[in-house]
Length: 404
Image 1 (cartoon, helix red, strand yellow):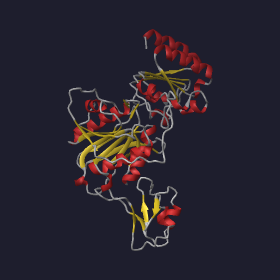
Image 2 (cartoon, helix red, strand yellow):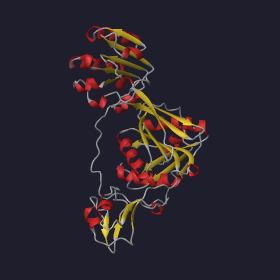
Image 3 (spheres, helix red, strand yellow):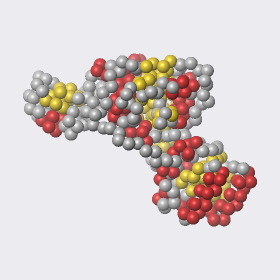
Image 4 (cartoon, helix red, strand yellow):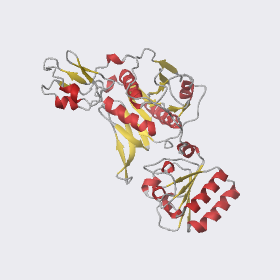
């Protein structure tokens, strides 16, 4: 793969250019240097268009990249998954995306590929194949050992332009959200964020991307008919990973000829794990959710102590976060985490659509609320109409006796 083969969208018409230097002076990213004329640094340019707007001779223009975007027959019949990793481990959402990609590919006769970017990642390729990838595209370079969004976006963009996958799935994580948006802008394609369901139309080859819309009051099905790749991001916990098959065979393509030029304006000074609760929420079999009905921190502390004894994680609704009952890192809902535990106990949660949309993956839901008309009872497997203070001690005793 050679990124120099890719023509950059910002172009200079040398017949019109007067070498006045205004474009270089107005560039906020110092991406244009003046020699005999303007020279553009693609690594620094952000295609903001300020130079185009300020050029008095109209010598600069941004060309839309239409290569292969409307020529579906030139697109490879592959569904790609961006493999996210941290501290030497593949993120769980990557396995979940490989699971749905595998199911979509089997239905449509396509192949599944994982894109793995970083340094010293060779051991991870076997796991990606075991979880469903037919091919792993590996770019292993010094300078990619630390996640810097600008660097990863450039490498991923060049790789996608060369291989032309039909679709790209990305985890809607802290890293994935920014990276997927940047990739969509660079590739001039669409992106549907926070999908709850993905389907493949086998006749048209279009990826049907389903997500909540209008505050969660309806589900929208979105397609990208004219641009490639079709991009979608999915929150952790929404899809289900398939069981790994260690006997699966696959191909690892090492892009060793890729010339990587890191963005010199950005460097990571220090990384520190803040002990975020995301991992515990996505991996816990039992999650206890608290809402505004819990009312005080003393009851929250009691719930947390109980949860620790039974090995459960504690989460909360947005109302609980706003009431300062629980930290925002443990919020479950449309603007928080999506979860799929074996058991979800909703304590004092009314059950607005923004919250319930994120817990539909739970196998069993127990709801405790004093309002018999609370929406949470519509989706709960078991409901208890009672004040939290009355029901909580009994609930603790029952679950303890059951060994949950």
